[in-house]
Length: 75
Image 1 (tube, helix red, strand yellow):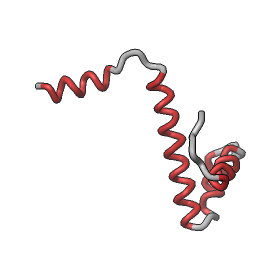
Image 2 (cartoon, helix red, strand yellow):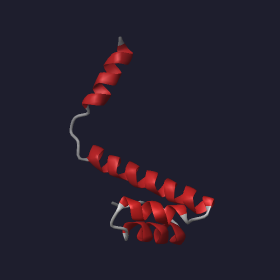
Image 3 (cartoon, one colour):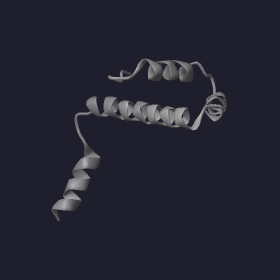
Image 4 (tube, helix red, strand yellow):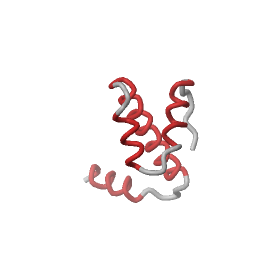
């Protein structure tokens, strides 16, 4: 997974986040951060999730959900 355009600080936060073995450890880490850093962590988390979705879509040859949505619009 690759996310372009991150700052050094964002990369450091992601490195720290990857070091945890459990969700509980990650939650504890987030809870001791300042509100600004907590928001930054949540933004990075969303970026990771979107990057994962992008990778899944890149591997697809058909898009059944999109086709169904378009059929609903075209009625």
